[in-house]
Amino acid sequence: MKTNTLISLNKIAKVYRGQNVETYALKDISLNINQGDYICISGPSGCGKSTLLSLLGLLDSPTAGDYFIKEVDTKTLDMDQQAELRNLHIGFIFQSFNLIDELSVFDNVALPLTYREPAMSPNEIELAVKQALDEVEMGHRAQHKPNQLSGGQQQRIAIARALAGKPSILLVDEPTGNLDSKNGDAVMDLLDELNKKGTTICMVTHDLRYAGRAKTQLKLLDGEIVSYSEARQAPSSDTAEQVLESAEVM
Image (cartoon, rainbow, N blue to C red; front, side, top):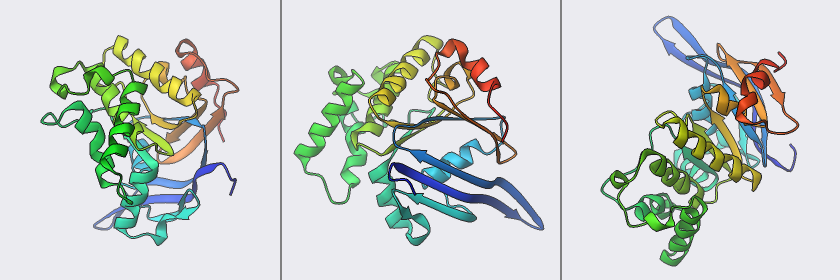
């Protein structure tokens, strides 16, 4: 395994079994995600995008195959150990912001850090939250409640929450799905900038304008990778459709 490989999937399958029926959500998925990658996963509804993101985030387990994160074989871990690994290495950004309205912005961002092992001190948590909020230019909203913010601002807070723990990778699921085009563009600009600074991103989106910004395009169909292409330079959103159409079928 390469020293800069964060995640390695080898012949991953996910099968849902019913009475006399087997449904393959994913088949024979092999993929390496390296430090600094910016990968977009696309494909039609039901192709396995969300299932793959859930497996990458240790929210679900594969039926077959091997999943290594930071050279750790996830099959050897129990649920608590997987939760610790997830909290340490993976940041999540969802279409729905999943903020807690009763908590302040500061406390929403701090919440995942309170579950860290080994435990972080209050001063360490405060510093991490302030740095994350400053990175998304929302430090001035630290004491507001989520329902006092616009949708675009709430997504920035969700990004700050994902960043606060300094994860190895951001898993991003339709980050602009609940935003208008102006706020969607702003959120994508922020993700682009984070990647330029070294953050590894794996994103699912249906929006071709945003998908084309990623350095690597991965297409799924019926649970299988049908194309994989790497751009020499991440394209602008104006060229998204051309990039996606030029992906070579494996």
